[in-house]
Image (cartoon, rainbow, N blue to C red; front, side, top):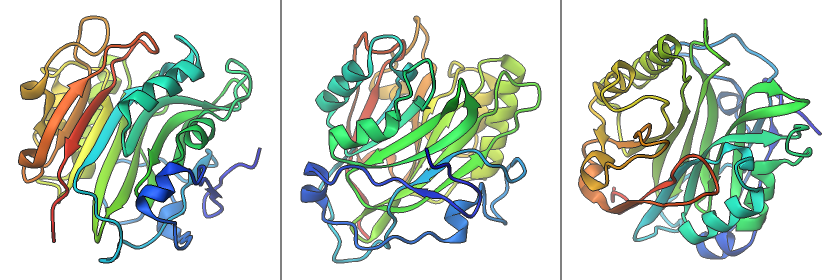
Length: 298
């Protein structure tokens, strides 16, 4: 397996199936230095030193006015538990039913012994006809473990941002990507915070600092926060001005009777959410969340 290193990233690029027919072909591959580093300078937040964790980048292209501009975009977030609660094929079947344009996924394996060496983000992307990026949080069990974003929309940028992991159960990251909705980039942050209380607070305070007050939109911040909505870390993220969509749409539990998975958006984007929902499934111990939003028009 080819491994992505700092300034030597691996191109992802899923199957060019129904996704490409719907949104158009990727025009170019732009592997800029900002996309290959853990975090470009001047963005704030806590970052780890450069490292050699696997970073698989999707094909990237500029967002242009003549690009495909969908009337609505479905974004889904789900901790798939590396398919170990069921199987990767059951995870895939559930994702096919959700039928999202962009998927923010947590807990994926690439080449680990425990999941038989499968490159899970690539396998799912090829099956769903989507492009993908993968950012490893750590090397694990002979392979890598981390976050993936799959998209039918063209990717504009993708980068890994390290969160403070001192005293944590394991290193934690955010996968920060932008996809093109016509000429307008939509920013999405895929999050998986630590489950230990003190480390969780540090992770989410670092995320707050990285976002800054009133982060410019349109932006979606979603994932497994491993904390309930009243927890100090979650409140720290919300203090940036983001809106907790499911607090009003469908505030039910997402894992073992608690709501620890969230979808946050900026205040301007919140009124453009057309619908949102939770999906009951046994394919993982977490509940998938999805939103349909109307992209802003420049």
